[in-house]
Image 1 (tube, rainbow, N blue to C red):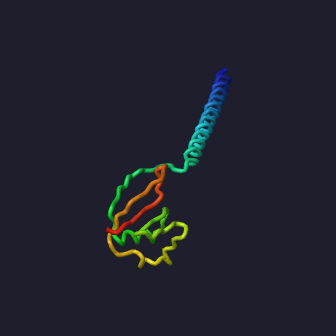
Image 2 (image 1 turned 30 degrees about the horizontal axis):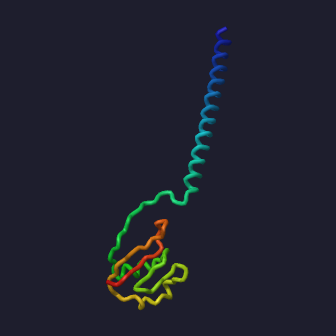
Image 3 (image 1 turned 135 degrees about the horizontal axis):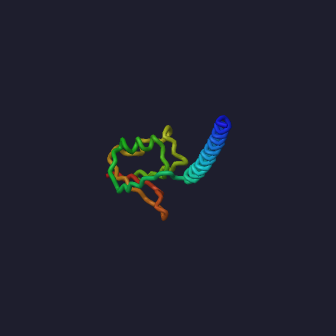
Length: 124
């Protein structure tokens, strides 16, 4: 009789263990689906994190200006009336003699959507 009860306890314990494990795996699968959905939503946005730093007009040196140009430009740049566009600008062939070696006032111009449309450098 004791052997039968021991067998029943082992069988019930095994069944409960299987049920518990299946619930854990099912819950884990649901949690992974939620995480995957959230990752897709975050990655679908074009900007995950953006810090806005309002940069007022500031003065830059000739070296800073040239370094910025050599690194490539994302926006149109105007230096003392010389317009440089990202599409046509090639740092290797640009004639830097057009830019006087002096200090410059850097000014940003924005469009209606508050996006940069032009960066202007004017000799001081």
